Length: 102
Image (cartoon, rainbow, N blue to C red):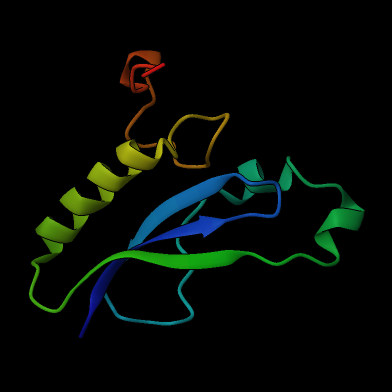
């Protein structure tokens, strides 16, 4: 069974990074539905498409290794920054943001 870490991209551009230990194609994570719902009007909710991308996959990783990779990718994608994504763990700190390279 393949274990994965994935990124969900919502129509508003915000993302959610999650993991699936079961290899299920239909699993879309445990995002806080109230956070997502607050960003969409009733009309917008009638017709929307989301994208699920596999960021990392392993046939041999332990559950603990998958969880660690998920946290690493949440930080790398900054999906715990409320302006970017819907992850609320690990808690976002502005000091986590990569330095501007310009």
